[in-house]
Image (tube, rainbow, N blue to C red):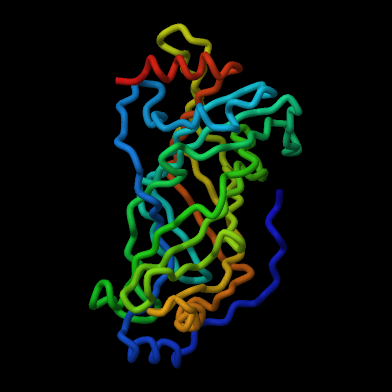
Length: 303
């Protein structure tokens, strides 16, 4: 699972594009920041060590398959980070939360990190969505952000598919922990309601590695269930080189008439030179060989 080789050379946005944007209303789109679809249901208080796992998809088609060998839930909190498009960098909206369920099938797929063969898990998003994070304001590159909302834009991340190839015990190697397809919705009055960078069919694909082994601890279920929770604290996830596709459906008519503005400012599509770093990453992974006992453990933890 290595990223696609990228050789395209990036050109910096021309001054003409910036002047055109300023004349057009100074603002139009900036990229990046992270937020997601709001949660659809009220959060349930869960006792430790299952805090944040109230929407684990234990009833999903994936976790109820008959050939499961292991099933579990993941709750991840990302405390800080940054997203770079070439030389342009904005902070990641934080805290960001990523929640999903997983299973390891009887086929027993494993990765090869060079020094170990950790399990590779299939995943299903939480019942209220995969991602949640606050918006970060992204000022327009090359202009002073003297008028927030005009000389800047908000961008929120939306999933463009499920997390794939979840391999948590690959931490500390160059093997990706997961593959996550995303799309970025750019929010600005001049770009209309459907302006995106990335789509479900042509997403931004993050292949994040955990270059350093995080602090790891194991917590047994407090009510006697066989479910075990692994905690990984103060970790870091990075992807140092991924592609970003061009803008789509930007403009008041949502026909793409303003795609060129976003593409000119950020030199999109971009085949290389883009990176992301998630810092202060805390992960709780609750795992069991039985869906029945996992579900019982979660039910007992509900407040």
